[in-house]
Length: 221
Image (cartoon, rainbow, N blue to C red; front, side, top):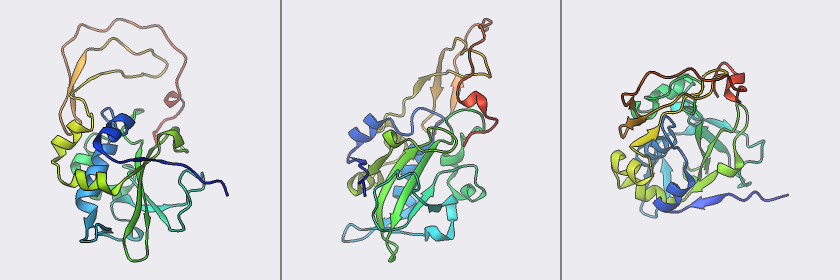
């Protein structure tokens, strides 16, 4: 059996360098924050114990088959969460769900996957992202170490997003169907991932361009 290699993210610097969950409107960083602070408890022996059984499918958790061999074999079941289009995901905090646009953008591409022991102890925690509507991106799949999760538990959401590199300024680039991106100014993003555009001149007509990947589909993920 070929053993899959997944890089571990052990501290905030490595999480920031991975660029996971960035930029807005991606929700992966907020998903990690919720998981670290609300879904698990840290026991005296530093074990991560789930406050809820993922088999009950709260928050949109569901069984992950790992048929793509995305993650290394650990002999324990995997469970996935983060699909904001599932009805059960409405149980996630508003700050995780708030900027899911439903449009052809990146607001629903991030996922968190855990492996579980029978005693409700969380064995491993992984983060990944979709590279298309069906498959996850192995290059951008990482394990989140227990030490990093414990660091995140000690921070506020605002401080965590700032230290994770969730910039307060991003370029607003929107791809319309078959239309090249229009000129855009900076946008201001609050620490929950919202944005408002800076004033700018009326956009000029842009030449048509070949459709990109997301232009081929009506929905995302």
